[in-house]
Length: 232
Length: 232
DNA sequence: AAAAGTGCTTGATCATGATCAATAAACTGT
DNA sequence: ACAGTTTATTGATCATGATCAAGCACTTTT
Image (cartoon, rainbow over all chains, first blue to last red; front, side, top):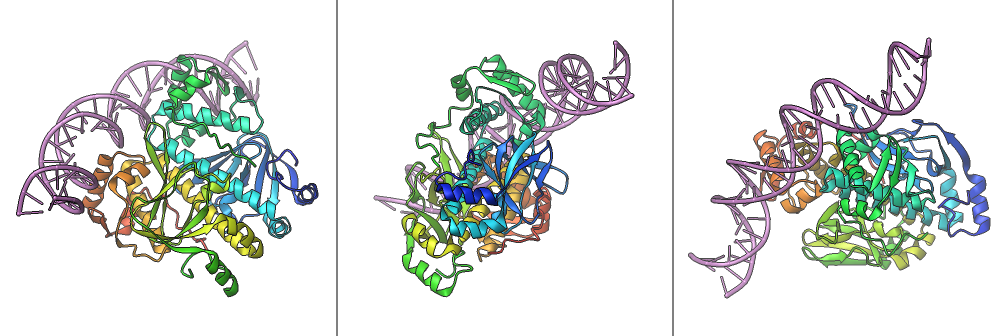
């Protein structure tokens, strides 16, 4: 529990109380659903290990991935508006989550006001990530999208305490292209260009960032170095 | 104050207390900034009258609008992650906002727990809207984007108690095309197509929805009727 | 080890929307 | 009312990414 983002700023006794309440070490397998769009929310979730995708499904079967969740991040806050989930969430690899049951959360956050604030912070963070996605999709070429995605993905991995220069992407090309609003083939070609320009090597899902500055440049040179980094 | 979203679910005496605290009736003119990206947050804001745009700016001068805010909606929650705003906000027309100073909000939400919950709800709602935007930008043609935007915009106007079948769009073509990730000319052509197919009439900023079903159809028939509507 | 399957890459062609360019229409201010 | 400016529309051409199609690499099955 202690490695999670959530207890930051809580007193030791509060962490213990939170600890007791949480249904932890919930192991999930690839493609397993945590919840479906339309479900009445039972809990919000903190990623411990692995990664998850949030997506919306249309009647015609077309889906759109709208969020990716890495260790230390929270998801499921989409349901806090009206108790109904507006996205579905699936594990992208073998993963491990903490479920924070909403029922207990309500009473607990009265006793530990900091907890509510912390959830608020994480939700705000997710909102900003979604805004960034809007910006990524707005006015960028295929190559820029892929390069920018890789930059941000690496940054978030670093933030989650994971290796950020060489790693296995749990995201399939299919999912990645969907997330980036591109065709599979287009993403593949973008990877080729990035490989040819020498800033990455990539074989299947294994990715290595060789030249982050070059990559940033190809991403459109747009991501300001956040001097006011997220503090918890 | 009472017409706002925020006091929903509060006791009369709590509303009064909130009422006293809020710096209200803050009049703003077109293009006036409420805050800039990077600013330390002073407050979050509730729209009373008019409309606002949230946008991110890149060093190369390119901006991307990532949010539109109508009466009854909250904005500025992007700063709740780390006290720094990650977007800039400008009024799109002569408007009127309530500022909820963060300093007072912290103490007040301890005395009125419902208030914190209500802000949480509104933030979750904004998150879902941003997810919907991701979906809109993901895999849709220009015509679908414009049609879907109009459907959702009309829905949100209705939700805000505004006329939804015939109204003045405060959003310029410039801003709209930016928001939708399209060129100005492309949006103009999409409007022409929608006009020609008889589902709208539009002269400059004045818009009239003649056939909402046809419009929904041209939007890609994707927006499920939200049977579990937002309740407050 | 061969066969079948899945996921990724590469190539060729096509269509949508971007870009360039020119009007047209509406709003400025004097 | 006038020029001057901004904002929207329409047209023509071009480029990027979508689509169609094949092949390759890596897994899983028997």
